[in-house]
Length: 105
Image (tube, rainbow, N blue to C red; front, side, top):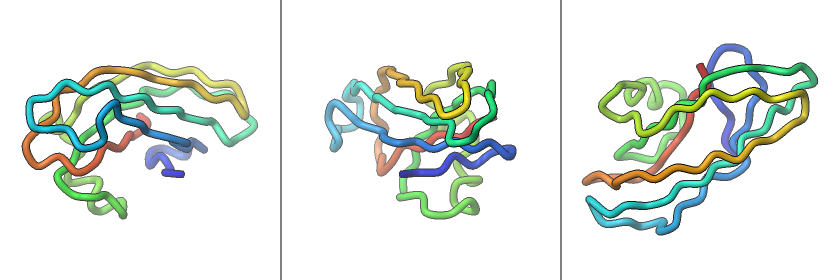
């Protein structure tokens, strides 16, 4: 599971799946993500998805890619405590693509 980094939210990306996990640059892929609120309190946030040319393993790395250049999708989300939501969207893969992550704002 990937934790969402952002304001003190208790969010987890349970899964991020691709219609093709190794797309060629320019290929349209469908991305499906399941985000869960692991806390007991309801929360409202914007889930912003980014791509990166490296595997993200630390908040320091992630900050480098939290820019409009790497943003691929944003969606407002409301979750009750212990609730999950699936988000699905299409994206055109970029040269150098290695991973997709989300940030809660």
